[in-house]
Length: 151
Image (cartoon, rainbow, N blue to C red; front, top):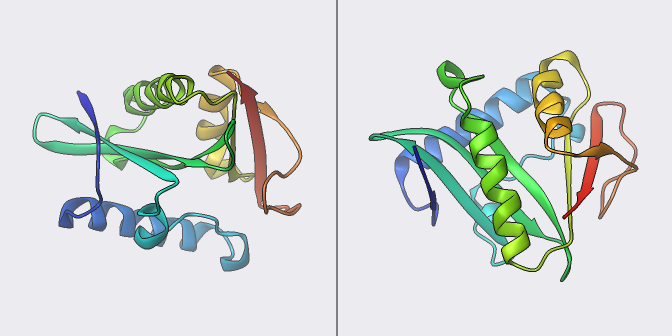
């Protein structure tokens, strides 16, 4: 598997992210959905990566700078048939390494609070993320879990 910075111009990643948004909309009330669309992911403060296995896109993730030292992990997704195969762990380790390289000292994230998101929360816990209060522009939300870690 290889991880590459993606400019989000390809049809395959656009479709992959659209599937992600549709899935999040089917699980989470619209007012509690915080997944970014393509335009938001193309902003200068966002770095976006795809994970490729052979010729197949198997995952993606992003880092959104909040300030000079703090960034948010966004758009973590693994192709459903590849869940629990190490794609997310490989990508999250890469994102943490890149965040350190960028001089960041804190990473935070928002994920869902219901059972569907339990594997994601367990992954983040494994990588040292701890539960925290809402950060940046987030507000308390029963459908959200907020996590953070220092680097």
